[in-house]
Amino acid sequence: MRTGSRGPGFRGSRVSKTRTLAPLNARTLAGVGWKLGLVFLLGGCVITRYHSGAPLHGDPAVLVKGESTKSDVLQLFGPPTQISHQTDGDAFVYRYDRWNYSSLTLAEPIFTGQRIFTYTRGFDDRDTLVVLFDFYGVVRGVAVEHRTEKMPVL
Image (cartoon, rainbow, N blue to C red; front, side):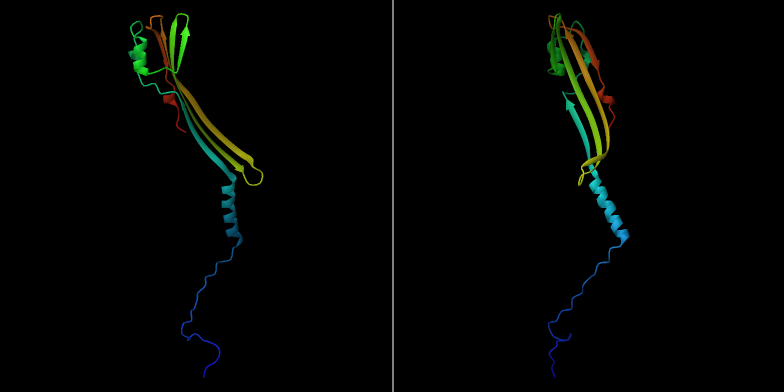
């Protein structure tokens, strides 16, 4: 005798298993809320390094006052950053500037866009070489200052 209902023994029936998620409690919501709040609170972090000019590759100690010429200086250091024409000769200026800068900003970017906290740290230094020439293009003075080697790492 057959009834209208099909039971588990019916050929082709499938039994599906469903998984239920645990209900969200206050502790779980607080943990998720804290993490999302931290993500939205962080505004950004910036690290910048800027260089201007070229590092001084040659050794200024090899320049001899009264003997070295403009062509010797150009072969040793390349083209200068600046050429200054003075009343008693020319001056070649070689300058290499370096800036290291980092910044961390905490802000609320969604609703107000207001900055809460900013921390900034930056260093800038410069290497400079000045070579003075007489009217004949012979070196009459050399001044050098190296400061970028002592720059701290960010």
